[in-house]
Image (cartoon, rainbow, N blue to C red; front, side):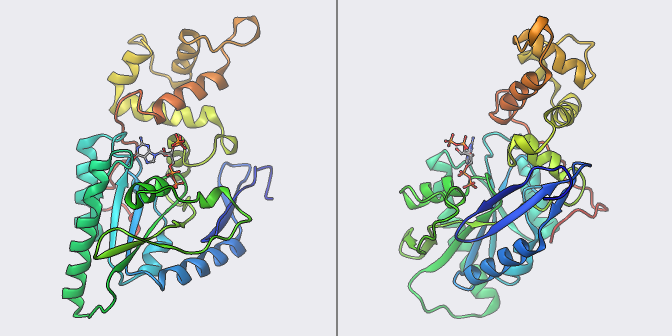
Length: 314
Ligand code: G4P
């Protein structure tokens, strides 16, 4: 454990990762875990032909991990912007263009909860794999090519695998001590899917990545300051999506300071402590729950980097 941070670890059959918050709310890594994670991912990737990289459509770069790009080098890769039902549809389209034009990656917006949306994935994977074979001149002899669904915790990997495989799979991250056997699930006559996801750790590098991950619920509330994350998210809403959240909480026009807004939300929603004083932590919890579940509207928190920005991952 580093500093006074809370240790958060998730272990699964594919990857083990761990990190700490230090006193400055930054992340400390355990290099041993990262090496182990890398080794396991390399082993898994050796058996697959195409990687479907799942990101959260509300924070498409912040929810990626650069290690995947590095390890998959030449393999065809499809970026799936999942939870697109919660993201701003116009901005999602811009992100897809960004992935294609700036990072050279095919990307598709999906909603793992919607069968119609998930149905598009196999066709796009097949087209991508065919294009890859044509471009590289490689031959392929197995009956089906193999897909791995990979991404950081909470982006919707299990939900997507369940939907694609049409069955319930084990939740790897929840069962640290259990090693499950690898199983391939037929999707159609051309492709099969590994029934356990490739779990990566969030990268926590670059501007506001930790804040984005916390605001969307990708990391647990126990490891960050709820008020700081709520203030961060309110700053974005104030600037880009003021209408939906102001209407929902019936906020007075003149309120703009995030702490004043949280106070007002607490008062309106009865988040009160002893003596009728607003319980800020409760108000933050309520605000973040509503933000994450889409009650404040379809919101994309992360901005597309400008061309001279260096936070692109590839
Ligand atoms: P993981 O395997 O990558 O860790 O993610 P998982 O599928 O467990 O999904 C994490 C949470 O995100 C789940 O909610 C899941 O229902 C939700 N989710 C996944 N994909 C989508 C999507 O496209 N749209 C929306 N709106 N939600 C999505 P949970 O509250 O943790 O669990 P539960 O409510 O499903 O029990």
